[in-house]
Image (tube, rainbow over all chains, first blue to last red; front, side, top):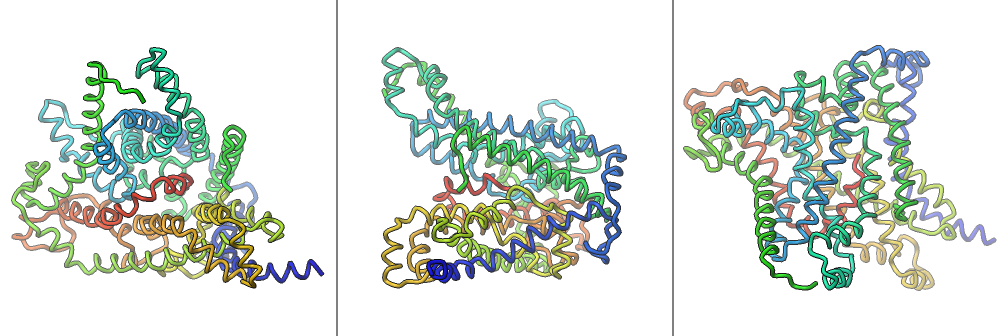
Amino acid sequence: MKNQYLLKREIPLYLMLAVPLVLLLIYSYGPMFGLVMAFQKFEPLMGFFRSKWVGWGNFQRVFSFPDVRQVIGNTLYIAILKIVLETVAAILAALMLNEVSSKLFKRSVQTIIYFPYFLSWVILGGVLKDILARDGIVNGLLEKVGFVPVLFLGQPKLFPWVLVLTETWQITGFGTIVFLAAITSISPTLYEAASIDGAGRFRQTWYITLPGIQSMIILMVTLSMGYVLNAGFDQILMLYSPLVYSTGDVIDTWVYRMGLQQAQYSLAAAVGLMRSFVSFILVAVSYLIAYKSSEYRIW
Amino acid sequence: MLIDNSVGRRIFKFFNGFGFILYALICLLPMVHILSLSLSASVAVTAGQVSLWPVDFTLKSYEYVLKKAQFWLAMSVSLKRIVLGVSLSTFVTILAAYPLSKTRREFRAQPVLIWFFVFTMLFSGGMIPTYMVVRYTGLLDSIWSLVLPGAVQVFNIILLLNFFRNIPKEIEESAFVDGASHWRILWKIAIPMSLPCLATIIVFAVVGNWNAWFDGLIYMNDSKNYPMQTYLQSILIQPNIKLITKVQAELLRAISNRTLKAAQVFIAAIPVLMIYPFLQGYFVTGVTLGGVKE
């Protein structure tokens, strides 16, 4: 009796979920099922069901490509550099911004430095490609002060650093928001007590502010760990060229070229599957750590 | 906080302020430079005379861009995408968040269903299988390929369901006692009480839809169907050798591929500039929105 009543009450809830669930089934779970193509000699006209089954063959072939190891190395190198530099830059900027006492100045600075975050990498890439070009303004300035012009986007040695620095430039401002929020939640009495005890600003920052935002720092770093295999696909696809594949090609760009440009569907899907699998473990572990260490929960 | 007016403190403040001015300039000047390029004659641009102010001011580049049919096609695809994409994903987010915000007692399937949604944040089929599914559902070269695959944004759903949960239970219960159905409660109570959260989701979705370009690149075979940013990307990756189309010699003095690119980069940034003031109110919530972008 009670069950029947409950079910009647639940029917509208199921109805509401109908559209979201159908979309999720097709466009999220569909591709997950589609990963079977990594074990097939996939042909688009035959589909997921009728393509020939080849077992682990694609995975063996993947590692016969000499550039795959390099691509994995590049991904980790670029992503880890980005995580470290972007976190340090955001913390530093937040600490400094906290020391600005003029409200108007602070707000103006924030308005400007948050902005690049909202521009797509097509726009930012367009800007960077122009100003960093051989005849661009940066090289113009370098030449004026007597340096030789630098091919910022064409030198394998420089390219990863260009990626890391430009992304840091893009998101540091926006990244300060969480840390600023954490700083404002520190009790002012702590600072008063410290300054009565004779601690200067620097020591207050070191002994009160930094420990005060420590849990936020740990949280942000753990959460970003889950995205180590995603070194910034949009940015790299926009800025790289065959000249810098040796240091700038990452898993996602490789999958894109192999799969969608050269139609090596199964091979690309095999790499994609490994990437999804490792990402899954990393994301799950990072959420677990975040949950255990700082009670972070998403719902 | 105690006021500290020592000399050391004042010197620090000066350098700190100076540092931030420098930082702000680094964010602004590249955009200013691109704007100046787009407004300068190509001869001056090639000669490297343009830095932060237009030289031989001309609107020819903009004129040329705004006369291109492709440009307006791309603009219309983008607008269609924003309207369809934002309304569909808001609709879907609301419809999913309400049932999932219920407790296990009210909705027995809730714990299973929420995991069904959350799992897609942890694991994905990746680029190639997703492309194949979009292809098999017949969406290639259709505006729906830019709308349907990304319609369910699980992170937004979770954001909104947390908001729904913070609505005092008593309000809902009294409505329920008065005989209101779930649909009515959703429409009359839950949605009106979570407008700030919905506004955040919508504003960020508008920017996200405007900025997206990779889906357009892979799902559209015909470049006539490219949205603005994809169209722009296809132009930007072409080398700066010479104009693809035939342009009169006289016009070539005023415009070059470089000034045209600059003009288009700037045009593509304008909508973001316009919506930016509205975004500012939602930054803090927005951080959590952007925190889990794949």
